[in-house]
Structures are given as structure tokens and as C-alpha cells.
Image (cartoon, rainbow, N blue to C red; front, top):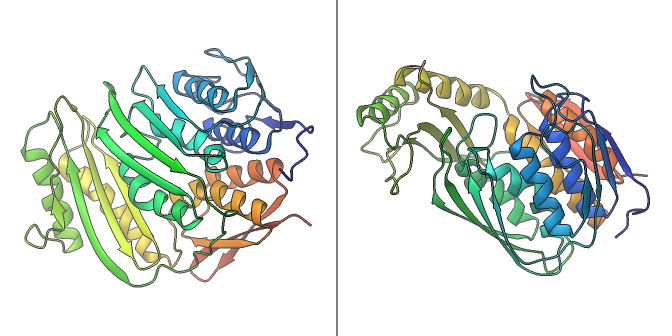
Length: 355
């Protein structure tokens, strides 16, 4: 490791957006660099601060992967100290008893397992389609292909969907570290649009709900059932009840995924309109990555820059407070510089080795 592992990584969890992302990024950086982590005021910007069940699951997963010790790992705790050990490849199973997002647990341990000395299989149980978290379809179609461009093998299998409040989803991740040092990649342009389609998931709900969502979306996007642009995937046994409407845009250099979850207070038509508004906002910009992918791609790319000593960057539609906070956290944890500047019709994120 090039990092000074004796220097603690000290984070203030109230910084910026003040949510769980600072904790997850801090845990990932501590495992990847070997630096002890000390974080205070965890989730101070949230109505219920401190560690909730899904955040505690991230801490417990980190401890398992690096054989570390954690002080303050209990529900409601606003202070945590992690002393990491060596990251160990292997077979892991992590479960969130509630419908909390199991995919956020995966994103916590993935950076370290990308750098491990062997392959890992991670079985995750919990929510797969949650508010305020990336759905499985986003990770599979948009995030994982970018990770593979670094030279890492990342195969994701959805075994069962889990919706709030029941949860019960099952995901299997197979992670193969790069044979050579991670290779940073630039993603500056989308390239031509190759394909676009929408999926409507509504297990356990009336069959007319997904049809109405797709019909409304199709009218606004110019997509049709006949062209296989409007799809109702089969559901697995005991999935749901739940509803997610997902739009996928495949470009030559990037795939973006947008998701709206159904709510009791929203009609099917309102869900579709919200999703179309999100897609249209992306299409109006020239940035390659949407706001969520811009945030979640930053850490894997920063690790590749650190390990290779080569700069790389990407353009995105906007820099949210979430993304800006993540950039600040990463710059504290790695010897890299994250520069965010306006570009024509977009924002440009450049990550370079620290001088």
C-alpha cells in the first residue's frame, strides 16, 4: 500500500449532506488503505441521527472483510472507531433483517474486495429496491460495467427482489480483483444512443398498475410494447408487494438507469411522469453520467487513480451535495485531488494523484 497506514482517517459525519454516505465511504477507505477510521457525529444531518440497522450492517460487514475491530458499533451510536486488519478474500453472507438496502452494504465492501488477493462471493439479503438507495437494476446495468472497465470482474445475480417494507431480497455478487493494477478510464462522452427501454415491476399488485405506468411512459417517450421498449418482467415466488418503474438508456460509452418507486399516494400515471421528468433532465445535459452514477463511480475511480498513479475523469449532468460530500471524503482518505469544474452543458470531475 502507498498510503501511510499509521495516520488515522478522521471524519465529521455532519459534513455536507450529513448522511450515511460519509460512513460508508469512510469504512471503504479505511479497509482499502489500512488506515484506522474515527468518525464522529454520524448522520447528524438526519432526523434520526446515528447508526440505523442498515448502517450497522455496513460496519459489521466491513469488520468481517478486514478482520478489524470496531468501537461504537451499536444502534444509535454517533461515534465509531474502526481499526482495520488485512482485507481477506472469501465467501461472505450479509443480511439486513429489515428492508434496508443490502446493495449499500455491497458498495461498502466492494472497494476493498476489488483490491483483495483473490476472488470473493458475497451473498446479500435485504432490500433491493429502496427509497434513497440504488436499485439492483442500476448496479447491474450502469455501475458494474464501469467497474469492469477498471479490470475488475464484477458479476451480479438477482435471486429475489425485496421491496419496502417486507425486504427479503437476495443478491449474489462475484468479485474478481484485477490481474494487473487497476486501470483508470475516462468517461467524457455518452456516444450515440443505442437502445432505450422501460421495465415495470409490480409483484403482488393489481396487474393494471404496471400496464398504466408503461402506457403513460410510452406516450411521453415514444416507446412501444411492439418494439419491446415497454416490458413487464416476470416476478419470482413470494416477491412483493412493491412497485418500481425503471428506464434504461444504452449509449455507446455508458448506460444510465433511472428509477421511480410507487407509493400509495401516487397514481401509476404520476409515477411514470416523475420518471420521464428524470430521464428528460438527463437528456437535456451533455454529461455522460447522471447524478447518482456520478456519485457512486467516484470512489472506484479514485482507487484506480491512487493505485496506478494516473489521472482520469468523467463528465456528469450535475454535482449534487451528496457527490460534493463524497469528493471531500475521498480526498481526505486517499492521496488524490478531486477537481470539479463546469464544462459545456455538464460538469467535469477530474481525479489526479496528489502532488
